[in-house]
Image (cartoon, rainbow, N blue to C red; front, side):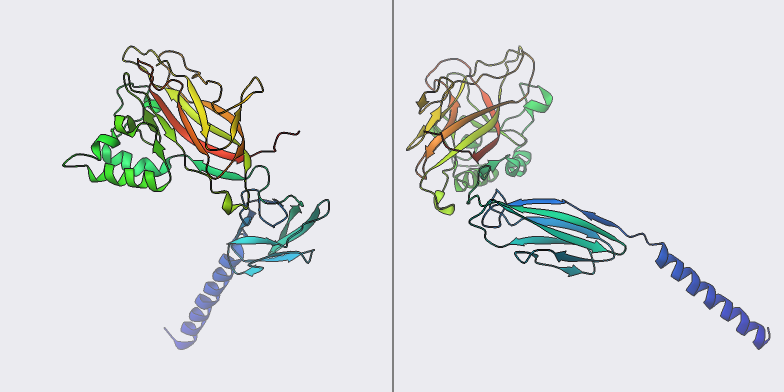
Length: 334
C-alpha cells in the first residue's frame, strides 16, 4: 500500500470516528424531571412535619435554579448532574401568606416550582409527632422464623414469643436484641410478666388464652416542639386473630390515656378510655381494620396504651397491631 492511499484511508477513518462520536453525543437525550412542582411551608420555612422541604432534580446535563423572591433560595443553585436540593425559606411570622417561584432549567427545558408559605406556627396542624410501621422488626422476625398471619390467613403462622425467648438461662440473642431496641424506642407492655407479645413479619401480636395484654406507646416529648400540651389524632391498624376453626377472636380494642389528656368519645364525653373498636373481619378472613381517636390536652407525661377492653377477661382475645401514627389537630373551640 502506497503512502498516499494509506494517508487517505487513515484520514477517512479518523473523520468517521469523530463524526460518529459527535453524533453519539448529540443523540444523548436530555433527561429532566422534578419530584414535585409544589411546595408548602409554615412560618419557620419548614413543612408540616418540621422538615426542610426538598426537590429531587433529575437532569443528566445539569441544571440551574433561579428564584423570583429574595426570601426564597436553594442550597444547590447549580450542578452538572442530578441532585437533591433543599428549599430554603426565610421566617414569615405575620401576614396572610406569600408565594414565590423557583425556575429550574436545563438544556432547552425549564420547570417552575410554586412555593407557598403561611404564617402558621410550628408545629402546624398535620405535624407528625410519631409514626411506626414496625418495618424495623423485620430483621428480628426473619431470624426468629416469624410468619405472616395477615398475608396467609393462617392462624398457625409462626409467632415467636420474644418475651420468653429473651429470658432464662440460655436466652436467644436475637430476642434479647429485639427487646432492648423495643425498650430503647420507648415501648413497653401492660403485663410484661405474662410474656404475651409475639413477632410477625413486620407487626406485633398480643395475647393468649385467659391472658390479655396491651402496648404502651413511647411518650411524646413536647419540649422538641416548644409546647406544654397538644391535641392529636392517634390512628393504628389492628386485626383479630382466628382459631383453628377460622373463628375470629372476640377482641374489643380501646385506647387509654393516663398522666394528662383525655380521649373524645362518640358521645362527646371526654374520658381516659376511648370507645371500643371491633375488627371488620368475617370468620376465616385476616385483614387490617383502621381505628383512630382524638386526644386533647396531651402532655409530655401522658401515657397512651392500646389494649383489649378488659385485661382480666377470660377467653381468647388475641390481636395484631401495625402502623401507629400521631398527628397534630386543632383544639376544641370553646
